[in-house]
Amino acid sequence: MIRVAVIDEDKCKPRECDKLCYRFCPMVRTKVYAIRFEEGKEKPTIVEPLCTGCGICVKKCPFKAITIVNLPEEIEEECSHRYGENAFKLYRLPVPLPSRVTGLVGKNGTGKTTALRILAGEIKPNLGRFDSEPSWDEVIRHFRGSPLQEYFGRLRDGKVKVIHKPQHVDMIPKLVKGEVSSVLARFDERGKMGWLVEALELKEVLDRPIKVLSGGECQRLAVAVAVCREADVYIFDEPSSYLDVKQRLNVAKVIRSLTQEGKTVVVAEHDMAMLDYLSDQICIIYGKPGVYGIVSHPHGVRAGINFYLEGYLADDNVRFRDEPIRFHVKPPTSTWFSTEPLFSWSKLKKSYGGFKLEVEAGTINKGEVIGVLGPNGIGKTTFVRMLSGLEKPDEGEVYLPVAEELSYKPQYISMDYEGTVEELLRKVAGEDFGTDYYKTEILTPLGLEKLLDRRVNELSGGETQKVAIVSCLSKKSQLYLLDEPSAFLDVEERLAVARMIRRKVESLGAAAIVVEHDVSVQDFIADKLMPFKGVPGKHGYASKPLNLRDGMNSFLKDLGVTFRRDPSTGRPRVNKENSKMDRYQKEIGEYYYTPQ
Image (cartoon, rainbow, N blue to C red; front, side):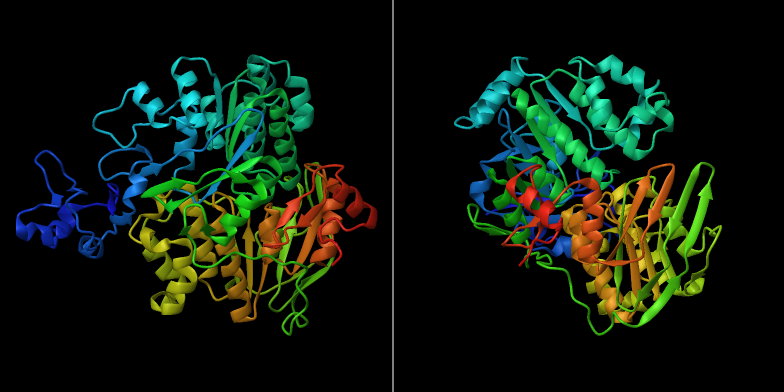
């Protein structure tokens, strides 16, 4: 048995806790110091070979800065990289293959980005030897017998060129100057600019300066620039962020086109439908976020995603999730609480300059979750803001609860709260904060216990999103409005949020409206659907809430896309365009649920 000890240096504050981790370490009594405070160092270090894994220091640390995990000794031989003493550790690496797309799926913080940066040549794998970096010959020898042996040999010799599309495309306006057209022309090494402008719908933004682009426009530009460049290996880190369903499928088609030219492609992605459509093989990355990650051996696409949803890997003989994840095999049927009207709105109209939005009159029933799907710039957020009272419709009335009975999580979150996460949630949840129900149903599913001592204005994008969602659901309201709650979240966190919304609505007899681009999440949570149609930026039209089958059929028919059901997990899978199943479902008008 080996032990991986990690100390979060941002949380560790020895002066404020009087070095409790050191004082309570049982190994100190035998003069064998598993926890050390060395001269010149403010933070403690844990000597992993000496640590017994008793867990006392983990429990005594008031800032939850220490994590100790036991792992089998055999896995130590497969260590690929460690950032430093008592820092994150990655085992194994994905295996990229020519003319194939290798997809990565796993929790945030388990090493997907680290693995991609190693494959891109931005980080040299140190095989866990952070104090004495191995030579390239040692690295290549470590991966002998694997395709990675040849890959790293070519990378060392400069015989492979890699293009890496990074995760944080929101930084592009701060780093790149000029207009979209000039940037694309500058990097168009393969003569693909014209085709990519059409395929990714960039024509309308060609004359715009980079600094005014939205998140979705930056994402499509980043993908276009990557594909424009000449390389042997293309790496895409979360290419679906900020994109609507249609744009995600367009990006997937563009990325898949690289394999037809013999290119090697690696993609890390949280949208399972897109990952399924994109990939030829899947590597699951599991472990404990921020502590360690283990990359599975490659699996077929269907099997790999199903293994991930099951939470069990037979070849590693490891279970990394307590319960499997299951989807609706057919649309959810009406239940006792879904026939009593709760709130409603009349036909609504709203205009902004050259944009016009029209929404059919609708009703929300008790216990219902209504999903909202549609392209970016079509008016979804405007509709939610009208329901929340932040926007007034030009025509029509909203018959919804008073502000005290409504809870709203906006699309773009600005957390300028000065206090800690715990102070914020105590203020919002009141007496409920200290209950077992609040801990198990609200805090635990998203792992917020570790963030309670953090200051709100210092959180990352994903952490801020989770706090905003929990803050919204901590209120006892009659209507919950959540605008794109899955942004920055991994697959498990997205489905955990869906479960939280469902349980909250059912327990209070309330209702929820959720704007979401991830089709799998909408399928998992929604009772009814409101599809938005029109021309982005010009006019939008939303129907009344439809049952899930009719809503999905209406939405997907406009996209010309069909989904089928996986027989094992019930998850939605995109049919390949013009396949036998695709043609059959279009012929019978069932774009989402095939006849049983």
